Image (cartoon, rainbow, N blue to C red; front, side, top):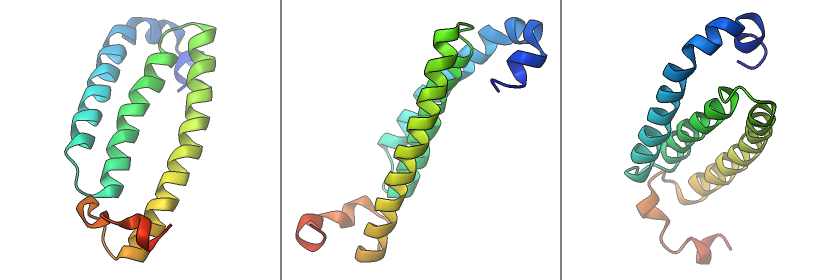
Length: 112
């Protein structure tokens, strides 16, 4: 998005900015609401990622160098942290045999 959308189509990007910002705000709220109600740990991480990508889009379409730098840093940090979360979730799923969050009571005793 940084490379193609803003660089190749600057006027179209400026024209579409209000719509994209509105969609990013909807993405933030929608992802957060769906994440709160999840019982599956991997779906929780996925819906939280949808919410986080809304923040990245807000940074990109702020049309400032600080916004683009912040969005780039956020993308790198989100990639690393989400990969680590999915790795830990995979270990827990393998160890407990379930993806449901309710089944993880007492994990500290089983996997310190």
